[in-house]
Image 1: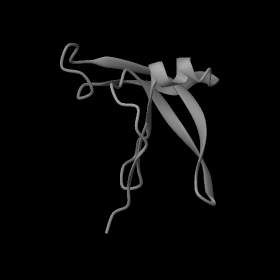
Image 2: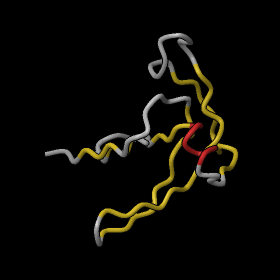
Image 3: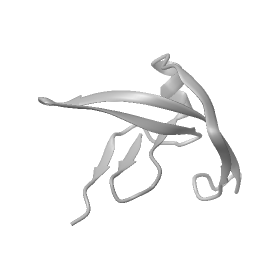
Length: 80
């Protein structure tokens, strides 16, 4: 899952969604993305998923676009 406060998009892996059986919905505005995979230069983002996570006492809910990412870590970045 990639969450970046300075970005306009948050992503979650389709594999992650499947393994955790997270509910997903059709994306309100499907679009193509070209920088996620080397094998396929363009992938269609057509699903979204709401994810709730906790880090210690902090708990948050984030809307993510479902993608064919190859990472399974929660990546957080706070701009300086």
